[in-house]
Length: 58
Ligand SMILES: [Zn+2]
Image (cartoon, rainbow, N blue to C red; front, side):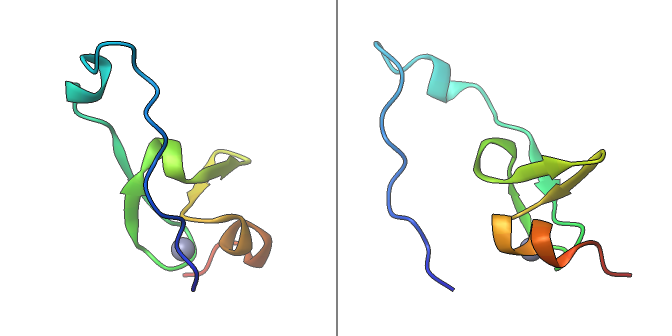
């Protein structure tokens, strides 16, 4: 699975990045990923667009 490299720097002074980011579990594969790197649909969270399309798995 291809992984995008570094996140682009978004803060002006970097302070925002110091805040702990929420990590959520992918409804398809169970991987824990930062909320900003995943996607949401119908109240569920996925690690990637591919898994969003694949749907939840129990
Ligand atoms: Zn996943």
